[in-house]
Length: 321
Image 1 (cartoon, rainbow, N blue to C red):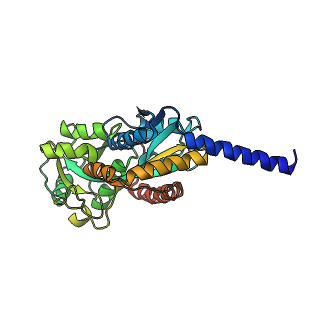
Image 2: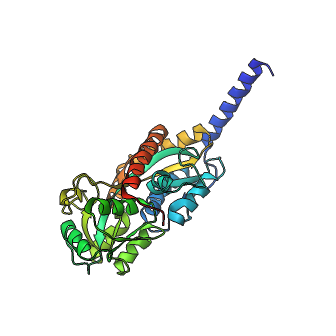
Image 3: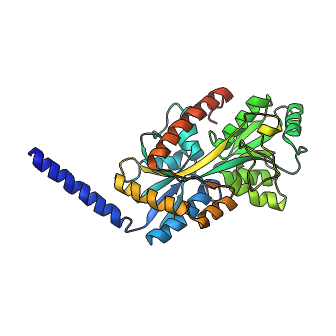
């Protein structure tokens, strides 16, 4: 085939992909959530999914596939067809933390996905069962030292941000607490409500309702600054551990190989939704902060977060459980 024919063929292909992207989607879109219903990943996926469904006039199906700290669902997302009709609600645990914990994973977080946009960042909180006799971080540290190894903390899985937040707390305070992993932030929170574990490091959406009802006591947030939803709750950093910070992020990605024109369309539609006052208020009420990005910005974010958490994994000595 001559060079001219190759150029014409490439132009025709590009034109057909562009036309395909303009009509996308023509049927239901599935968003895989690698954690159980009720947790932050699920709540945020349903929030953006509902609005994308309204924009596209097509059903957006949330498909919860929990297990192994998000690895199972994330692998499904990586192996999905490259047509844009299966997306993944990605998050820090399976995409930027777990790669530093495991020597082998069934996916490559930086090669097997096409980034679309971050949906939101969410602070973690340190929340205790009301029976735990500590109302401040300093009191908790003293209690943990007095009851060495007796206190337990839950997280949304081994290698999840909540796990690493707890390990960072342990390494900076010298306390010994037992980590109890769950399949998501919702069951990790329920474990504290029921008294199955003493405390949790987890995101705000599943915790705030229980805190308002008095079934959980939030004593600190893990961000560098206080958050609007809990203005009277101090940060861990200002409570005696300067430099402590741990936040979670959640965003849409697609399997690598989805046409760039489709990625661009999903990004444009999602970003437009995230910039509306309605969505900003909805996410803020959940304790989340909208953070729309370009695909390139999300790719850079994933790389930088991977480097950051690799250092914390090494510092804390955290291991998969």
